[in-house]
Image 1: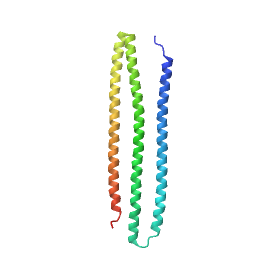
Image 2 (image 1 turned 120 degrees about the horizontal axis):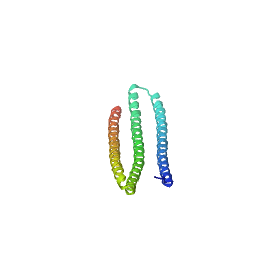
Image 3 (image 1 turned 90 degrees about the vertical axis):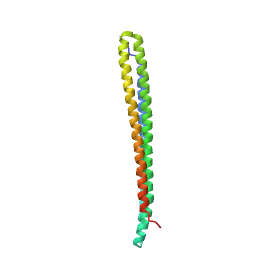
Image 4 (image 1 turned 120 degrees about the vertical axis):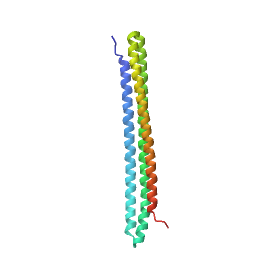
Amino acid sequence: MSTIDLEKLAESQKANAQVMMTLVRTAFQGLEQLSALNLAASRELFNSSANGAQQLLGVKDPQQLGEIAGAIARPNVDKLMEYARNLYDLSANMQREITSVMEDQYNNVRHNASGLIEKTGLASPVAGDVFGSAMKQMVNVTTTAFENISQMAKQMTDIVDTNVKAANSATAQAAAALVPKK
């Protein structure tokens, strides 16, 4: 008959609570940074819009209107690109932090499972062989699955990074076309 080791159970619960607290703390920090980014972008957009409206109200002829509109558009596009880069950096950092926590947690679970397999095999060699083989197979399958998921997440991050860079480049080229040449 097996007995539950209350001390190990308490340690496990404490470790799980710490992982959850780390994930929640990471989420709150990300939301805090996102709020600060959005507030700064909103403030900047308001100031730019007010300044641009004042400039447009002072226009005397149609040619001047085109020049001012182009001069107003370029800084706004640059600010939009900077906002997109900052938003991407924020999400990439959060993804790295969460992935790191999950990898650590997975490695702990895998280590504990390996210890349990060895302990069970020593306690009951006949039944332990069958149980140990099944558990080792399960650990191998989950390890492969976890590695595949981690690789897919990295590939998705790389794809998004490439797309953000391409969008920024296209936006910069479009903004450059808006500014009248002298």
